Length: 128
Image 1: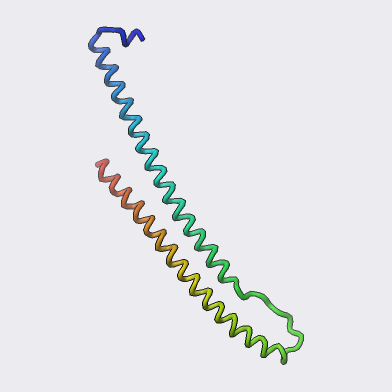
Image 2: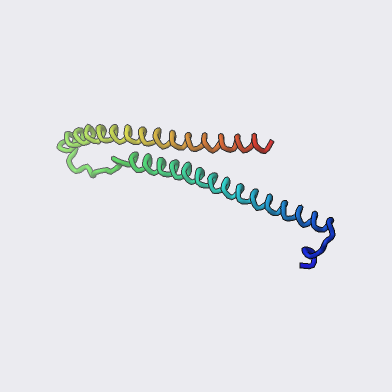
């Protein structure tokens, strides 16, 4: 408090400069915090998209991996052919759905990554 009560102009100018630098640092810290939040959100969206894509593809590709015991080869041959036809159609549908989901999610991840890179590029232009 003694510093503030002083009438020395040099002390007063130093106190004003300190207060100005303090406010600039606080403003920069808040800007940095906002940028960090945005970066983390983008990273979470991209990571979540890739993880979801991985689990969808993994679960859809497991579809027809069950094996049956062969007791009577002649009678089961016809049944196996029918099951293969059905499972190939279902497998084809599942593969197409998985491909569509992967393309959609990768497109979403690409858009988010582009937004992030553009924001970083704009941030670099402002700092120059």
